[in-house]
Length: 171
Image 1 (cartoon, rainbow, N blue to C red):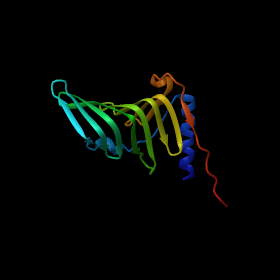
Image 2: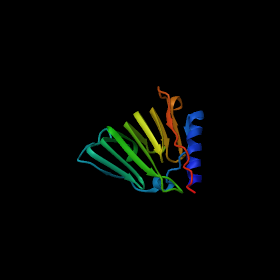
Image 3: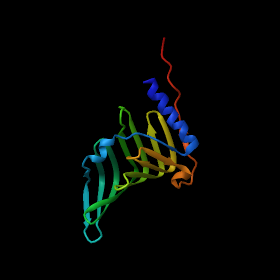
Image 4: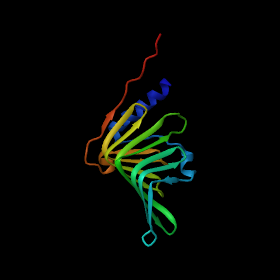
């Protein structure tokens, strides 16, 4: 457990210097079907846009997302992008080789299906264990296990990072 905390602390420390860090989302999630639920649904077949409103919930494997509104953009029968808005929108996902989740929230999230990339916009927060960072714009690529924030993600704010110290074992 101490080794895992040391690794997590090191990853977030590297974030301070590089503007990006790696988190290892559960790799099997992208192979799972995506399930969506909401209070209401509107479909515009001409534009390929589907709007879910009210208590929107998405799940794909261990990935869970909650929002007030969700737009699904489809082209030629395939989902290209999902855009969620909320006060805020939340997500969580398990990581490979760990029971720990990565959690995030933002006022707006955009999931690009082909790139398997989640963009957190406005009041964005990403947490891994007790470590966290904040920015106006965070990019989380689930397949490449990569996170970017600040200017590397075209953000306008400085990245704020909290790294918890390692816990000492009791004698």
